[in-house]
Length: 157
Length: 157
Image 1 (cartoon, each protein chain N blue to C red):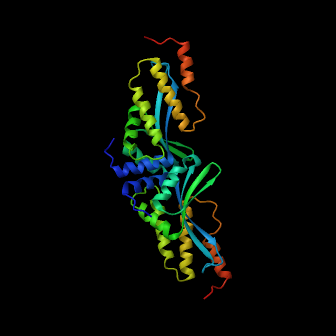
Image 2: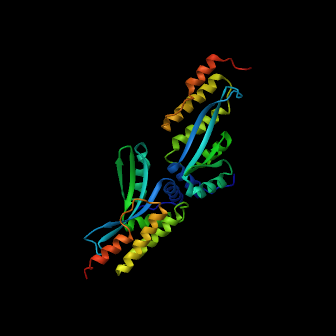
Image 3: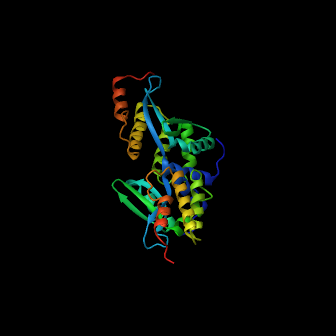
């Protein structure tokens, strides 16, 4: 990630507030310690004709990938460390997504100290809360699903 | 309009690039010298739940109005002078809409020196061009309409 000046960060924060999205997903993963991955993402969406701005964003952050789907494309950064860096950079500048950034950082920090199922469920609770502030309606993997999974499976030592 | 610091302007430029719109309309107006008004607008759209950011924008610019339509609301600034001020402020910061800002300012400047029907048609031509870079498909009032109007009507002195 290059060093980004504060006017550019303010611009990106405005762009994120207008057009972008921060989201967290609970993804079933049998190879993960708790049976689920907590996946953090930051995404920007544009018409294909405006893909250039997404390339520029990708250059700024030096992370993520650009996908094209029909007439739309998106630039998405996935992953705890990269998303945390971006949220910390944009934190002083965002307005609309202030709550998202604060809650997102809270989730990412809690993820760094996961000891017990209880800890993991607490992260899942915050992810559910994040889904609510995103008005996300399609989430299937929630804290309740993880809780049920824990009830039916014993953790490996 | 209050004095806006450059980080805030960069933020607003990003917000405009992500979510906003600049557009020009040719509006039939029998009380106007050439029979049409060239109407300049800058608009920002948000879900009703995010109306607060639109109020904040309105405070920054000290112009325009906020409307609610169902679940959506918009903050729109209409008018040559106000739109020109906003475009000049955002000009150093926009990225995606650089072309829009430059062409918009060109239209607004040409409007300040309208002498002849030919001058007015030239502005209409630029407004048509603006519609193209906006991928606007619903425009009915175009340079061709104004030209036909001129052919059928003699101008008052």
